[in-house]
Length: 390
Image (cartoon, rainbow, N blue to C red; front, side, top):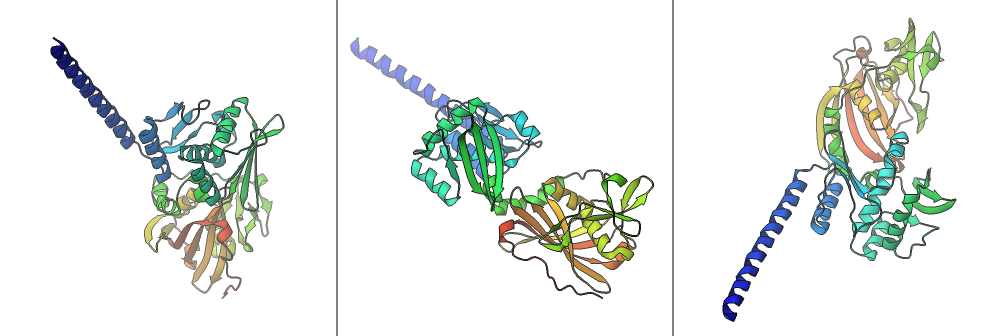
């Protein structure tokens, strides 16, 4: 009887273990499949999601989930863009209503970077990462001897709704979070696009083409007379500013047509018309024949409406500046610089066009050589002061 019972018990255990193993396999396969179905805007987010699946068995879907081993007071948050691509994974620190009213990539960076640190397995790796990326985290309320412990204390204190201040000085950001006039946390880091966005330079460059193809140009909005200033000979100007040199300007020039202002495009106003072609976002039907230089000496060529290209850079948070390098009897050469000061980069677009474009612009082409995501602090001189004239 004893042996029969033992045999029955052993068979039951084997069956139960088999069921458990099968159940575990199905669950892990389901999690892996769910993860595989997701699309991520960059490699870093995909790797973070995979780590959450592998280490914590977390189902990485859009929304919020409390992950106790990481943080027991604030949920992890996963967000997607309009195409359904995951574009943010982090610890939910900031109120979404606040972020909509005061939009800034910096808030997403803080949420993601705190999670990046807490996902590292050791204190030494956390400190090495911060040292290599030149990130500093300080707190008056929780002196940080252990970064991991200090971060968890700081995150818990976010329940008290701190006030925020973002400052930029000498190519570094300082984000201060205050509670009752005490510094809950101060995060200091470089104004560097790859760090803040989590996207590598290679990924950023390769994304330009696909993002541009998907972009829908906004309708042109005419200026009213009250929004502009008198220039000369019945012309007006707006958006006056320059970058690096006085000849590289954001200015656009207009003439009055009834109650609205129309950008000028005429060989009689050569330099003003060149600025208008790129700065004003007005669509004259001109095409941009683009050669984009990529990381590793590679190149990509494509043609798109010039007004759409310029509007696309504006949509990325850039401000446009145009300058003429030189011109002769038939050709004009110059540069357009699309500058994003918040994320510390710029796009450099060298252009060449024929003067007869100003007589009949529709269907004409501007040749452009594009260098994307150049760190602002790496630029010494992009403009030749020696301009050749007729």
